[in-house]
Image (cartoon, rainbow, N blue to C red; front, side, top):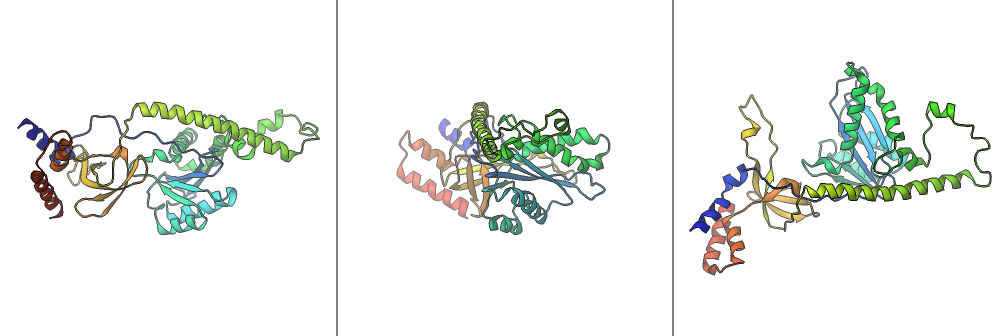
Length: 352
């Protein structure tokens, strides 16, 4: 009897959707390992910010995962057309077509127009999962940008777009902790000169070895920077993964498993709705496709409609009376006739 009570409580739908989890978040880190500049490119909008005299209210950020080079533009609106135009002018026209473009699931990036522009260049567009933006490297750049802008503008919050070029120069010339080199060295094989460099550095006449052409010097410096960066990136990935995985647990699901999805409600005072009293999870959903070790495509059990792609950190097992009995049957005998009746009742419950 006590076992039946435990199984009944464990399969209670209201309890499962209302109680928060006390376990470690699921999912180990799977680092993206680029091998060359502009192989992986991230894109994101920052804003809205106070509208400037030029009419700008958003920042569009592109970042190269390998060299850490950034292309930043102040724009008037966060639309698919704006993102596509800047992708053509700031990335493709300067650096060529990236192999992969990574973005969140914001409306500008999932529009048919933006998808058409990206795919027409041969670039594969990859979307991050909902409520898990860590995959997109621009999130870290966005924080750095906002910190720098905050330092520049003071109390003149409508002047932020005036400082974008200076901030970009600083980001492109500062050594990155992951690669050990500045983005300019990674991309061009040389450091960008500052006004101070032009004053303090000796004249280049007669400095270079005459027997070694500039082109060979450039190739050698880029190759050396890339080799050093590859080793530094691997060490950085291993270090971050080690500390990240210590706070995570390994979880894997199979196709047709039932799961619940973590909700992210927002309070609405006008509707007398508070997020603190809202269900913690929603569901159940069924695993329809395993895209990777941490990403799964779900479908609604009630309607069969596609529910989207979710990271494993936002999903947890959903228990039913039948699933608990099947698990129990692995350890002790349960009459086959009883199992058939239970499956029939479960089928009628979710298909009625």
